[in-house]
Image (cartoon, rainbow, N blue to C red; front, side, top):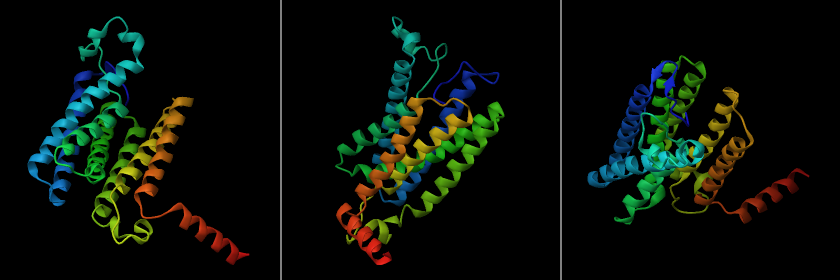
Length: 246
């Protein structure tokens, strides 16, 4: 999925590009709907979608070129040749979405994690569509399994997005909690699913493992930082619980 091969089980890259566009449009619709429910302004929502699309493409393409430098070295014009040298890097694209959100909300002084929580829902739903489409193109069952997992996680996060801030374990001692839980758990899931995907396709390597596990741990740390919990209080509770057991 990191690379758009010239052929995908006999299908030319046009089918792959169409699938990518459909997945993005669906993810954008999910983001738009949830943002409207959160009472964000329509203009700002659409501006974020456009900016995210632009930066996702730019950074996805640039990172892909950097990771395949041997093909583009001394031929930088190939970066623009999407038909002959197709490819977008998924992590570059996701990072581009984050940049699009960041650049859009700076003008309205919005809070990044409020918006990226909803963008994460869009990425999860778009990812489910993309993986399901890959299954239809390639008839590879692994893609179908990953699509189902993405879909189930999206449905779960969609249901908890508007009420997770009331969860006592997340709010801690604060009277109100901060956003970021959906973003953090999404990052952790993307890292874990990346490792599983590499294993399923027998394409595991050290850097993929490090990157995937790094996202998994980083997502968990983000959730902890954004929650109302403190390391000091948690350590005290663990020690107190240990003394009671002894």
